[in-house]
Length: 171
Ligand code: S3P
Image (cartoon, rainbow, N blue to C red; front, side, top):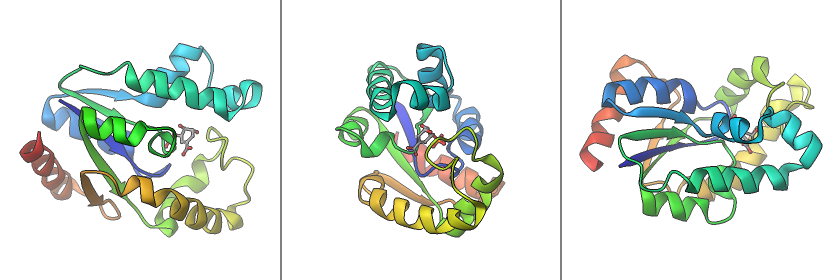
């Protein structure tokens, strides 16, 4: 069984993912880290040198290479579910969990962490929330194909346990 955490940049896929994986006794993988290791360069450099399309190809390859793994929780990149047939593939190969968060909350979490994310690195702080609201709206149709949709706006230890229980019931 593979659990795929999906959601916008900054929604906590990696941070919550690590905690969830340890509660579930699952291995944790960050898909961005796998892609960076495979390309042997940071994602921001990949975008700059090869462009986004090449990044998306490698992201899809790295995702699909996970087929057949078990006891694995994967934090996917925010764009993975919206490209190609990745969302359908994840739904067919594991349990998809969407960490849903408001644009305001995402903006405040992303503001100090823009630089390593090429899609938002160029934005001024004042533009961030407006950009996220539109971009998220364009992605929401894909994210909402997830088998579990969880409100991640106010996470704490109790809600993390609740999410763990939801995952365990479906696993
Ligand atoms: C992206 C999200 C990033 C990373 C890349 C593109 C996106 O991952 O894959 O910068 O398209 O939303 P995180 O969601 O982990 O920031």
